[in-house]
Length: 309
Image 1 (tube, rainbow, N blue to C red):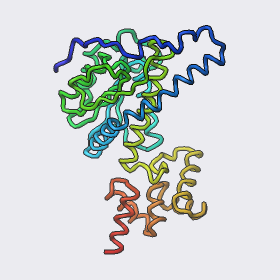
Image 2: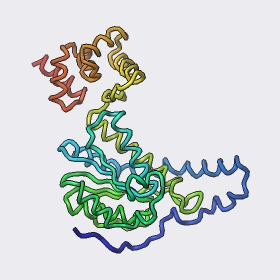
Image 3: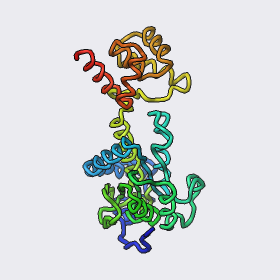
Image 4: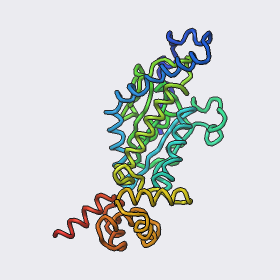
């Protein structure tokens, strides 16, 4: 496995001193917070400028999942922790299979709570993670504020060699796009309020990118109906109540009728929804969902086409 041993150092804007915050240590508490908040206003516009490339990443990741492959996140430090958080929240929100999203964090699980010195500089460790877990056809998304973190670049190079599609999210518009990256999503958030503290604007931008990326993939994969979380796991009383409310919202029917439908569908919100919206029995609703890979709208389309044929 070929791993790049040298990465050209290009100073990231996140490392530069921010002239707008040079006097921040002289400010009152309120002015410190106002100054940080003003800097944070840069983030949405920077993300907006990167949406074209992010859109390509979403489509490629969706294609990978539809073909039976997986999505991998790779990061170090703040980037890795944010990636871990995003992946962890997908299961309860969208009830995805356990293997759809995998996370590779420099330093392993221990680095989630405490910094593991030198872990981000180990490109061979990043490559080893990919050799162990990545398969041809997978989609690998790396996150590195500087665009040059060795653990991440090493991982992307190895993943590309294996046959995965690769993308990199960085906050450095001056970084040269690595040859191992198919899509470079650059979010130019500029110098941090505290020089080099990429847990600030860069981290906020990466959180927004990750949330938008994974949510868009879930929508494309049919894990929602309209803007409703119809694929969630109703694993406690609060979520069972939410499932009932969602079914009422989607169908316009009262709680009694929706509750009965959920019971008949053995708690499967999608089956109950297709049953109520189409008027067919739960068994036929379940089959339509299976035939449409769980897409409620597609299942309804199949049933409607069958009714008019």
